[in-house]
Length: 256
Image (cartoon, rainbow, N blue to C red):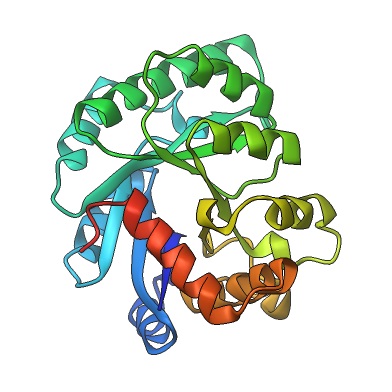
């Protein structure tokens, strides 16, 4: 069985067939989903979703939304994190892709610090979003006296970055881009990082694997990520399923 550790099923792109998407996942080899609720507008929908068996959640404020977040949002976030089916805090992190102004960078770091403290307070792992900010977030995390366990979501850094994160105790989230023909750097990371430090994700509805590229991504397609990891590492498919699932259960202790 497989755990898709990063889905966004609350997204409006699933409004027309959300139930069918979930059922297709459970009819495949996927037996658990983690809904990543990192946009305030989706928090309520995510609370509805996790009422279903085998769907869990992570709540957070995404770095690109920090300038929109107000004090009440952070207060509500702390309340949501205490939900019995919330297994992590995130996705949180740094994203300089669209706006690397000092105002935005400072706001992102302040928000990240607050949410890291929440994760520590409630003993939750973190789901880290990092885009165009790998060196900065490594420096940021290394300066903290305590960093919760977690996963670097949709890892897209270098092998050097990957080794640093693994040495810090992080897992690496591997998504659809690993199946793309031009993803040589990511394939090299997967080849050289131990299987017991990898998690599989879809990030649906985004980052559709090559086989279905051009269509909306969904949890059932995470099987393609597992297949590619097995191919790169020359491992048996069932072994990759088993180990990545165990990795998820070790990190996300709230999953039962």
